[in-house]
Length: 239
Image (tube, rainbow, N blue to C red; front, side, top):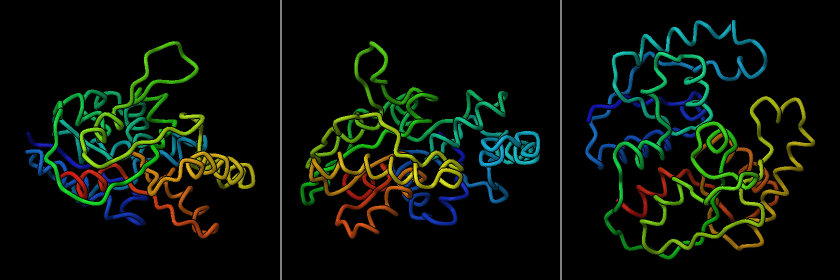
């Protein structure tokens, strides 16, 4: 299967290892991966700040770079949701990584790689959960599910813990963390306290934007807990 890798700008600038892990994961699962060289920001920061019209150039550039591909995969739910809402012609082609693995490739097993046992906490990002339906929502009367957790359960040696409020926002919220800094930090501290109570080694998520926010607080607290994108964990401990 030939797929295009859509790399969010903040991943490209701050967490390139996540893009590399995503590429390696897709290739090891049998995909031929193409990385369009002229891709830039998808325009989400402008659109979320009320300037969607000014992001039209980003939307056009995205179509020019990715329009020829049947499948476009991205390791960020928030960026995928933005593209689906602002590039409706590409909606059926753009996938968040976990949903692509579970729904398109239908990954049901992963090779075992021995390693030390890990105790992790899963962070369900709001855009992925409520916008893309990557996991169930506690406010709805529905059976529990999480596409990211389903993938992580395929890896031996991982102990998955559940925070007291499993789908609470971390406080990042894109530009929210800039305009409402104090509230954003307090929400992040509350989110971390629940994972810290579970004594996790890693907090694992599908959006490095949320994990970046939590990582900043962890560093200031001098906490030994690390953050990890799900692609990195799967490459390091399964494939």
